[in-house]
Each structure stands twice: as structure tokens, then as C-alpha cells.
Length: 431
Image 1 (cartoon, one colour):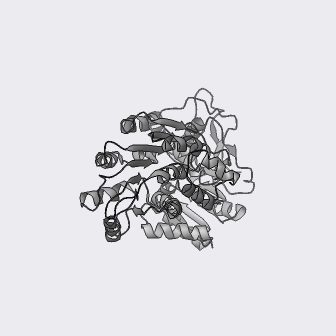
Image 2 (cartoon, one colour):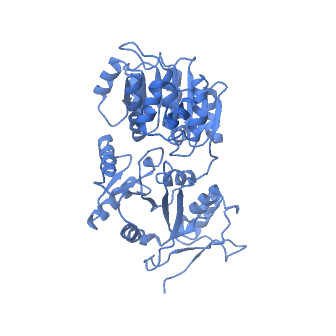
Image 3 (spheres, rainbow, N blue to C red):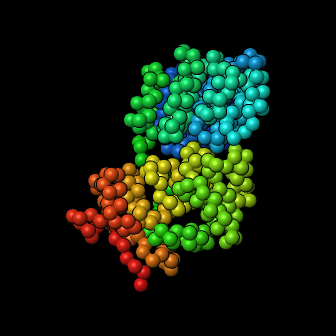
């Protein structure tokens, strides 16, 4: 037997599933796969946390489909995977398609943004595996088009993200409609206190798998920051794309309208790009991802709907044109590059009013982000943020309330520390 498959076989997987592993080209099990698969094969509930891009999807699909029975025609599902976004659902469905081709299982996906009728017909025919987003699944349950009475394995994927997006009531409704006697697998980027508080009652004596603590960025991603003035951001974006290349780049921004606006600007400058955000239809989002994958679109301009779990291979680099409010979102954004052991890099463009968000990110990671080394000659605006290279990522930062109060009393100005005004951030005018 191939040495690669022997490593997976030692985890308890059978011949059909190993054939799927071979087709997907996995070299060796990732740490989350190595720890989660044996526990799942043993029938245990699992709570797992791992960095993005570490193979979590295969970590639950492979062992479950290896042992899952087959639903009678017109019944099912036996396995239910709930995930927060349409893109994640489609990605899981793609991996499931490969595995099911070897195991003989039938899989169905139900997500918002698409017509109800084909999804209802697929459910009526029956399935072994159902991959769903919470909102659409609730709709179908309420319409009587779906039953969860036969679910043997429930998977909550990206559980922390579902909580962030306000899906807790939907999650509880869905769980109540599954049998009490089931195997529950909870996968998340982190097992934070909030995740544990809201989900620990769903599992029984779970095996805990925690590959990386909260705030751990992928080791394969080199990180840079560039201080600018707010009004210079669009110019900076264009200049970076020209200098660093505009092929297989993801640009993250705050806001759906901003993503659309920036795409219009980039197209006028001659760049091929497409927006991805919550207001785009499912077909529009999937078409953009397909075009990006084929190289027809060089730049995706996205909101944080794209930051979690989406596996887009060979992303050259990530550009955070806007610093995220939530420091954890930064970890997920930059995790779109440097996946599957490949190297990648990320640049964050930071204006003075985003200074504290940047410091929150550095405090979460416990490290300072390096200055972008190729900024010479760039127009950074009239009043760019200048970062002190000696800033301490462990320093206690002002509360959100204190920051808001300071910014309201001094709009547009950079916060200063009274005790050490020479540290932190300074502002200067270009000469």
C-alpha cells in the first residue's frame, strides 16, 4: 500500500474512503485530521478547533462517510452538516462529492440565494448527507419539505462564525429537530468561552481537539502593515497591485457598497476584478470564485463573508484595504493565502482612525506586524499614520468606550498615550 494511504489507514479509515483520499491527493494527515478522525471513527462526540486551511472538512467527512449507512429512498438525511455561508456549504459539497463517489452515498446541498423547488425535489428523493446553511434549512423545515428525524451525525461547522452572525436561535431550532441519540461534531476556528458557553450542552463527553490557540496566525503567511492617510487608500490599492501583481489577489474591505465601488475603480484602471459580499446572489458569488480559480478574474474584492473557511488555492497575497474591527477576522482573512503548506503574504493598509484595531490584532497575536518594506516612492497621503516599530503588543490598550470618547473629542486625530507620547503611533505631514 502507498505509504501516504497507510498513514490515513492507521487512523481507522476503510478502503473506499482511502480511495477518495488518494483521488484528492492528500500527502499526509493534517494535525486536526490525525487527532479528530480516530475519535469520530470510535463514535465519540468531538469539539475541534484548528486554524483555517488545515483540512477540517475532510476531518469530519472522511470518518463519518466511512461508516455511515444508506438512507432508504425518500428518507434521510443520516448526516447533517450546518455551516454559516453559501460558499462554505458549496466547498463542503465539493469535498463530499469526491468522497461519495467512492462510498456510494447521496449528498444534497440547500442554501439561500437559489430556487427552493430543486432543493425540495432533491430532499423528496432522499439523501444520506445534507449540507445546509441555517436560514434555508429552517425555511425548508417550516415548509415541511425536510425532516431531520433520521439524523445520526450532526456537524456544526465554523460554529464560532455562526454565533457571530446571529445564528444561535436557528442552530437551536435545528438541533431540537434531530434525535437526542446522535453523534455531534463541532468544528470551529477557536473554542472560545463564547463558543463553549453556547454549544457545550450539545455534546456528550466530547473529545477535544485544539490545534492552535485563539489568535494564532498561519505560520506560512508573512505579514506587513503600511500606514497611510484615509484618502490615499484607493491610490495605495492601485499602486500595490501594480507593484506586486494583480493575479490571484484577495482584497478585503469593510462594507458591501465599498466593495462594489472599488471594483468599478479597479476596472477603470484596467484590472480584472469581481466583488463578493452578502448582497451578491449565490450564482454571482460562485461565478466570481470560478472565474478567479480559472484566472479570468485576477482580483476578488470581498467583505468578511469570504474570510472563513473558503479554500481558494494558490492565492498570491491578501490585501486588507480596511482593518477589520474584530481582531479574529484578521486571522481568518490572511489565512486565505499560505494554505496547504504553501507560502503566502498579507499586507494591511492602516489609516490613523484604524490604529486601535491594528493594535488589537497585534495584542491578540502577541507580535508586532512588520512594516511593508517596498513602500518607497508611494504616495501615502497628506497625513499618513506612522507606526513606532518599538510598540509593545502586550501593552494594555484603552477600552472601546475610552477610544470612542477620545475620538469624539478629537475627530480625525491619532490617539496618543499620555504617559509615553513618543511611543505608539505618531502622525506627520509629507514634506
